[in-house]
Image: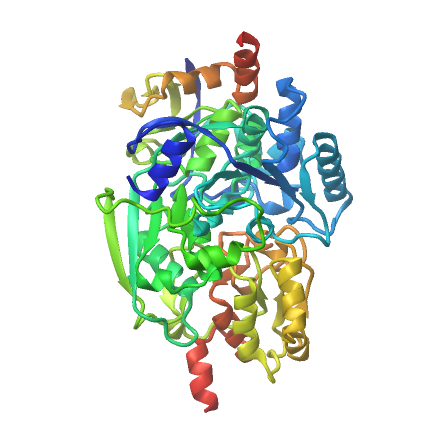
Length: 424
Length: 165
């Protein structure tokens, strides 16, 4: 069995499972946020169960519309706080957490081998830690609140075997954009994607999270990476649970995959997903002149400390181009504090970028940093659908933090390697 | 179990941001949500859907966000069933969980025209195009999913199951 199959077999009390089989899995962790939680709470109340199945296995994160930008959002937050209090569920409120997919692993709620479901499509991010993690809807979350179980079809798996060393300013984001560009937005519907190979072994948790985060953009059920020393180092001090047996969960050598894709990143250049589909991917250097109104460094895909360091490396001592409003939104309170300590926040403000408190913010066009008709934004986030960041007549280009930083300086979409060459 | 309606067609990779833009996610009343159904592609959609329609899409229908508000908006605007060549998995589950039938059927968007009168049996997956006098075979749903749909969604289904225990 591969790692995903092993986790699903264990969670459903079976010795083995096969792709296509439907299992009833025990859930180790459930996450809901301020936009999916309210519908889940309403549905839960209709079920007629008083207490949730296990209040140690559920977490609520307020991150999408924070701080409340409207009375309606404030009401939703109030509802979630009240539910958390009544059920004694851990809730990360404004100022305490940050973006859910960063907060969950940071606070030790994501462990290798666990089955984690979240009422957010990017829940697949946690696969970076060797967990089986997938997104669900609100009603399904209500059912999990009540029963602690979920039915799941065991997915077929695709292995992506990555080798080679990234060039300077080419990142895991460029790799995953390249993969999505090749496979298409429907290229992995219902499937599991396992990332393996020396490049993945050498990759930080931040990079692995970026890869797993965007597997849903190909329709995948989950993305997964075998846990190793890098995983252990990240989790150290974040959980009181014993990690001994969970580490080194591996796919069997004879595990079956629907296909294996081999990628060498040695010659990979910075990639861009052009409007309005995540698979409309081109090398940044081939884009021609795309003039910008906004640059956004943030979201659950790319706003971790490693991402901010990379952007700061490029923005240091420079100013963003007149007319390009540049937003930097650190993933969490921990990320923000670390960036502050390292002097990154000052680099951003010196460059005339605006640094905001942790929130999903502009990524889903909910609040702050929305786009007007005819405007163009380059963003480190994960979706460039029509209307995603505001007006249905705005354009969103997706890129790495290095590319977004370089583009903010020149005022047009720019390969960071080109910027460096120019100034040499 | 059968549902019927007039076909309204959309293309491939219809994402949840066009089905229901993020700015409306603070609304939790489904009637309010329905007013913005498909706003990203056709602001007139809620008006057209009122009479009871069947949405026909291409591949990867409902891709993107896990927002259940997307199928809810469709359901409350008058959509009785969604037929597509394939679905994004979270949308598929969400639709079933709120009691909105969704059926996969190969080539359905090429064999259907806007305005065709359609009848769907979601247990067998049989799709009847009354306007064209033709039958197509989609993927039927397994009994436990049909039960969720006939119960009106996962919550009612779960209430019944928990009562039995």
